[in-house]
Length: 324
Image (cartoon, rainbow, N blue to C red; front, top):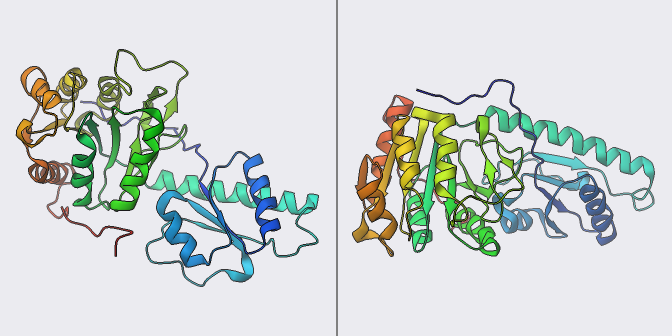
């Protein structure tokens, strides 16, 4: 059986940046430098620190602030590394020296971020496969699942490109899982949900995201079978797949591949689906280990993960970040 092939592979993704500065001119100048260095700025405001963190949630990987306003401790829900950046001197923030200082700190931050990602590589990976009607089922499944165990999810949902980012926000705001679009260089890390983009093909060789210029094969975007083939090849016994509500037959071949490699496939029962066609065709022509409603799928997944981890303490109910 195959297992993740990780030797010599490193995370090359850049952290998503949040900026909190009271002075608008400093915010504009800092954002320009950060973006010119190739980083995505997800949040940029003059909000109070606590409000900025609450607004951005886990969509930000690292924060840039005025070092005179850094709090002694981060809010309890924040796991991101913090970069302290001195931009408080109005007369200096446009200088070449200041630009070099920011670039140096960004480089140091990136190295730290990538080390964190490497240390949190997931040994087990599960594909969430869905089409029409699957969004709410996936959300319900994740809402009741603890994100602290050694597993990462890859989420392939048949959806329009402009709607894909909404999947990330839905997961981030309603569950404790860290969701983001598949970004070249990212690793599949513990507690993460990597959303597969419908507009461009990705590969997952060695458990690291890479993007390709070619479109997805066949009529489906993203192509669930293609993603399943990648994961089955890389993770073998450590690969799972859960098929939710949907149309079409994309997932039949993938379910067989994962089972052939020793992984586990779970299927939402047609009676529990908003649109049962995908579940029905996988049950009839694919391969699977378990079938049930969302709650039963969660229990089956927890049992499978317990077997993979060699213990019985995986929680099926966890706190939901961002909810009162």
